[in-house]
Image (cartoon, rainbow, N blue to C red; front, side):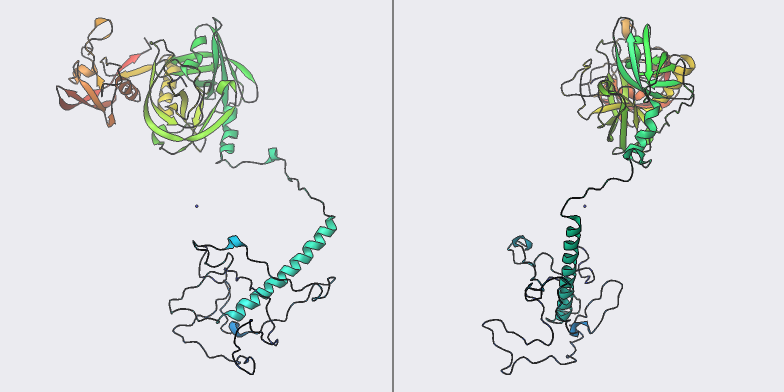
Length: 503
């Protein structure tokens, strides 16, 4: 851990009939039988009666008119229009082979496993609840539509030729009518959220008195010039050194530490000469965040200021212990986990929801094979943020008194993460009692060796998890603790005490 998607089948108004395999024949033209076929009558074809026998009402299908028009019951007997003539300026029909033959059906136009299905572009087959459709009841309609398609095709071809001739065969480019920089992004888009938030995010440069230091991120907390960030971002320059905050417009301001909480990994800075018109970022409610919610992170990964990345909340209440590797400055949190890209330099920056409200402070990252103190880890999609509700409580304490206040249970627990709970130690620091006399745990009946397995409804699997959960509360809160003693499970009520400062 580092500290950081068939159309409406049966709608004839939408289905396009397929082009027949031969050009349509006018109504007065003699019928030509296909080679090898037998004529229907020795005297030649028999003309169709003016009024063909009406089909059985139980099985017939009336032709469907296009959507929004009434169905025409006689459309299937209408005569075909005369063959079209070529457009003006072209050769005769015989010389120009007009009308042109229909395009051949490509081999890939068939669908179905055996390739025997209808060809691509064929009209959808209608299914009538009255019975199967009789063959030939819609032939005239289909042919008429096909001729119309050929005519339209001829017109399109002529217009296309004219346009190509006028253009001289050259290419044409089209320029955007609006400068992209003048385009406005909707407030709900990532670009819209980023554009609004960036002016309130700063890149922090911390230079320690011993020459050490680094770069992190912060954001405007209030109009008085307070900047909220991580403790580990400013720790090297907190006592002696120099802190500067650079806004997205490039303007830089000196800053000083107002207060910092090592355990929470939260710090508050104050701009020494804040500019007028500061716009604090709006604060969200981290308790109402849901897994899958969109997230937007802003920061300076590897010193690249004003970087915006996106992701989702991938988990909540993730117990995280992070530190600088010294063993005495670890921080604990019940974190918001996100897959938004977070890298060193993002620390202290805001994690925003889709509205642009701050829901967390980016604080730590996980990397393959990383350990506490590894500072050059890169994002693998596991980033952790301090919930803003907790960070806000801490910030208010730091602005008011300059020091943090921690809720406690008054017992020392083991920090081993493989104990199946938080085990109360046999002895406390310096040989003192592990359970403080008259402290919250003692008053609730807890003893050394008890294994705390739940804190309210949260399962506790280790000491760090317990501490992270305790610190999401305030001193004076009453909580339910479930524990095991001698193989038996029991519960008790604990009223949280307090501890001031990081000592």
